[in-house]
Length: 187
Image 1 (cartoon, rainbow, N blue to C red):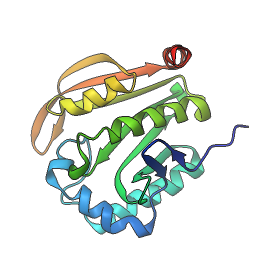
Image 2: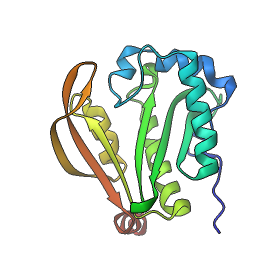
Image 3: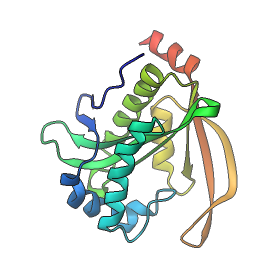
Image 4: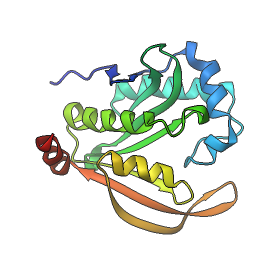
């Protein structure tokens, strides 16, 4: 059996499980409405019990193999700046990618760097066939992250999700194992 790493290191980030010591930073960034409104399900207002739930989900998800959740941390300071993870769909052998990052860290390429690392992690260590993700059409930056991470558009879904009493168009992106392997060969 392949050992599943708890920590992933990139050029500028460390992806590791969130801990109780991260609660203040999680609340600081996740409670920003501009961050919450760009996600599919982040609650607003975001409170301590939400952070506790996320940390618990991270730990329990890893134990069951249902979720692999990581805090995005700056490599030099270990400061939490966001979160990223993959939710497994075992019957279909795929995973749903999700992420968020504190507003002050937007447009620095951190989330793209984290997404590439999580995609590599999922294909190398989880043995899945496909990774997919959705984003709200009003959040084009998230689509850019997915494209830069090697994912391709699979679907446009008109008024597919309701968020804060507004129906949103969404895009679905994905990448298959064989597509990822092909890209790795080119590097």
